[in-house]
Image (tube, rainbow, N blue to C red; front, side):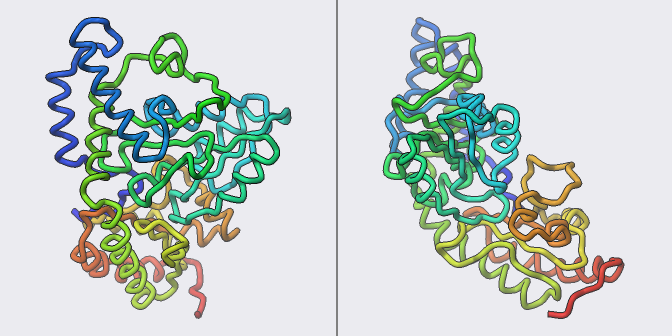
Length: 359
């Protein structure tokens, strides 16, 4: 299998799986309990909290563990219920839809802008947004789910009030994430009914998941992970882009592959007169795993809201494929894609009712 859907979720690192198996045996107790096994479990959780805080430039008590990025995003938006929330049409659905439910017109206002888009990999200039918000006495949240482990970040230096993280984008388990809340920033818990996380997030701790998150963070920190993405992964991504443009008529990039413009691991491509879901299924039949955009929108037949916002062209949006890479990706993966992709696109273009445009 050629797996090129890392932006949706990453395979568990062997080190993560080993750490989680160990936690199941050694740290099974309720981490809120006062007995020794409970303290041992809590010690593991606090070690991960300190590690994540160190890696993102936060203080440990500014980190709250959650079930994942969608919960973290909803928690921030819910905090500003009834107040004006400004965001962009490029955001994840967990921001856009929660803002529609909870947003109002009353001040103070929250700005929520992701640093990197999950469908195109585009790096967004949020510095000016942060400056403007703080000048007006408002607050800023950024969904950093796709950024963690790809490029270094420091939430204090960025002057963020809130930030979202997720374990399964860096080789950790699904079902665990974190929310950074700057000390002094407004906060309203989404899940109540317990004293966990200093009453900021009720519910029994997912100790095993948090330990897995920590093992993934150690991998990112200790194994030249950032360098691997900046060099190895980016070169693979760019090579695939070049070969697609050269070999496949009607192809165009929705990702700007210039170093400073996008994350190193995401490539979004449109194929004129070929439908994206059909491309995905044909590739899947060949053992090549890709996506048509955000995995959270799977089953939604509407065109990508991100590409519609960027291009306004429904055909471009419907004909897009997202390839996303990890540090285990290889040149063999690229070769296997190019062995079958040109034929798939040619076949689909041949039966399409849409006419190919001459470039």
